[in-house]
Length: 157
Image 1 (cartoon, rainbow, N blue to C red):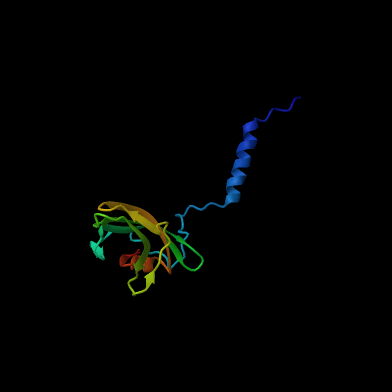
Image 2: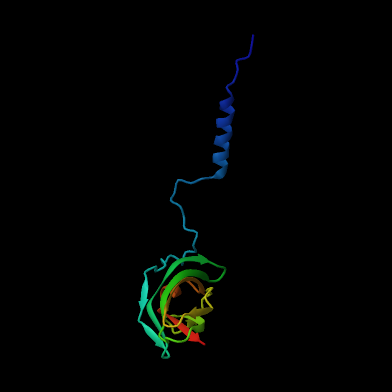
């Protein structure tokens, strides 16, 4: 008497079932990958600063900034954000080439210097330059990030 043939797919389903059991999936909700104390959401609202003048020939207008996301590091977090500023050269006869320093003022009075690709700018005579750039700053936690109060620009010729 001949042995009955076993369908091939039966072995496939058995293997898949064993694999799923080995994965140890749970029926509970997904757990956050953040440590227990890090449940504060990052404040991503856009913050607007007042227009400002540096000397007699450089104006800053439409200044705004916001934080976009954060990533956990070993003992702190890295916050990625964006700033925008319109720089106006009011000198009609000379271009302005300036070095740029960007700083963020924390709620506790501590200055944080973010990393940003903007270091030098050339603003044509009597013209304006719109700058939109990302920054990365390392702070202790999201609470500290949410307490960042102002963005400050310094320009040197």
